[in-house]
Amino acid sequence: MIKVTRVAAERIRRYLESRGKGKGIRLGVRTAGCSGMAYVMEFVDHENAEDYMYESNGAKVFVDPKSLVYLDGVTVDYQKNGLNEGFEFINPNEKNRCGCGESFHV
Image 1 (cartoon, helix red, strand yellow):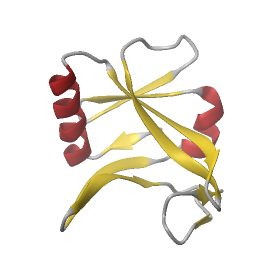
Image 2 (tube, one colour; image 1 turned 135 degrees about the vertical axis):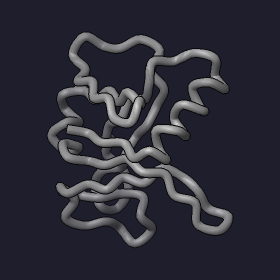
Image 3 (cartoon, one colour; image 1 turned 120 degrees about the horizontal axis):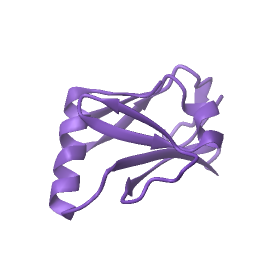
Image 4 (cartoon, one colour; image 1 turned 180 degrees about the horizontal axis):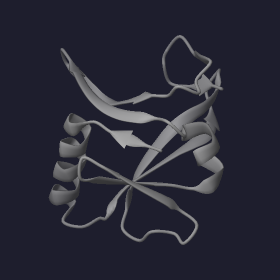
C-alpha cells in the first residue's frame, strides 16, 4: 500500500495540471548514493501493464513490481521548510539513510 498525504496529492495535481497531461506519478527506486538506493519519481502518461496502482487523496501512484518490495507501506508527503521544499518519503522499510538524505537502505 502506498499513501499520499493531502498536501502531496494537491502538489501532484498542480504539477499534472501545469503539464497539461498525465495520469499520476510513478514511484520507484534505483541504485545510487552511499546507502544503496534512491527514490525516483516521474510523471505517468501511459501506465505499464505490470504496474501496481494506488490512489490516495485523489492522487494516483504507480509502482513497478521490483520497486514495490522496497516501497510497500510508504507515505508520500510534501514539505516546505524555509527556502527548501519537496517530496518526502516516509518509508517503514528504511533501516538507515545516508548523511545527505539522498539515499537509503532496507
